[in-house]
Image (cartoon, rainbow, N blue to C red; front, side):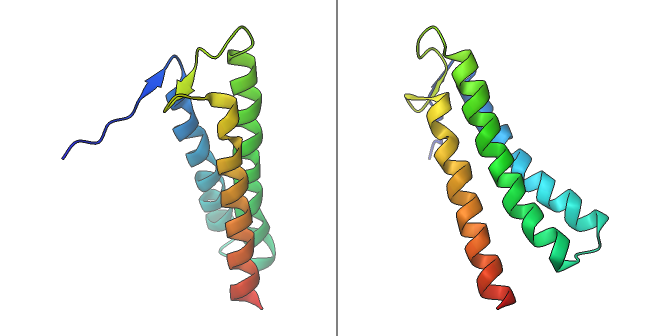
Length: 98
């Protein structure tokens, strides 16, 4: 079985930028010893930061055409993935803490 990633230009940069949100949440959780009042919003904020970075960097790289893609989708259009992760994380936080 093969796992194929199709990209052009700097398109695969979407993957580490998404992981940046996850790393932000983990670092804040470790720094504040898992205090829910701080770490819960940090997870959501981390994914929102990822979405903003993907949108901003993608628009900047693709200002002269869609040269940087991941699975034939221009890089700046992957921001919805960060927003979706933020919304799902917020939903989990509300369900767990309620």
